[in-house]
Image (cartoon, rainbow, N blue to C red; front, top):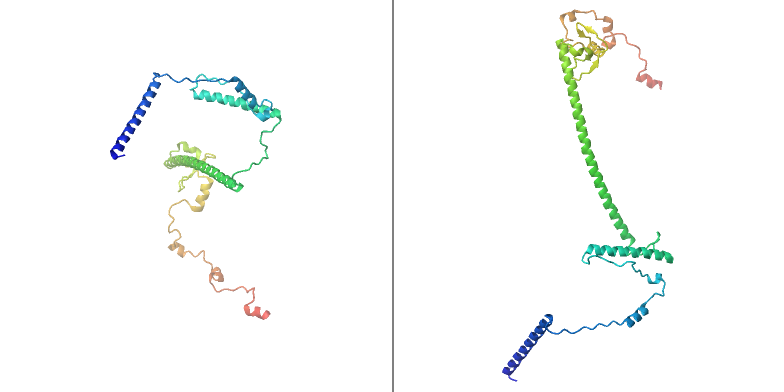
Length: 293
């Protein structure tokens, strides 16, 4: 066969394949449009054969504990099969009913179905691996508890610090109010306007300003002013009444000429550097101690 003949033969085959495909597509389109007669389906309902098969595979002669089959008492009826929530709820109710019924039948048969308390199942992971996992879980739990405790302590410290600041501010305000009142009373005492200060004993000579106000034990007046208290009197006797302090112990002409406090006997005593009669030594000297030994 020459090349021209082969080319013509291949083209004819391609045209035949294309015609077959087009014919098949046309037939399928006509069948889909119900323009061509459809092949009829035949259904066979062989009840005797089905009943024989059911009897053959039936296990009604066995006890229930060997079959473990449960049939629901009520069929599942839903308003709409498209409603997934309602359909799943019916399945759940049917499964719950079957579980309760199966538990009652198992107990009636006397077969144990609950796992005993001392049951040890074979584990895929080793005990060492599970111990590490348990330790890790405990560490994570401890870390969470420590973080919560630290957070709680921080909150308590903040709250305590706030309370402390409020208390300190309150004390400062009280101290300032007392000092202002004391300053007012001091000013009235110095000006002679007693006013409400007649019922208080006030330390007006205190330099630190921390004066205390005490109720007067009695109206003791001297020249129109209250007499100082016992504490103030002791301080006055010990330290004086104020005034000039510098140069009070310097000698003057009168103090230098005053020889009334001079004692010859006292100044000749060895304790003052004079040459007097010494007391005999009660302890022997070193040489006598050495000779004695």
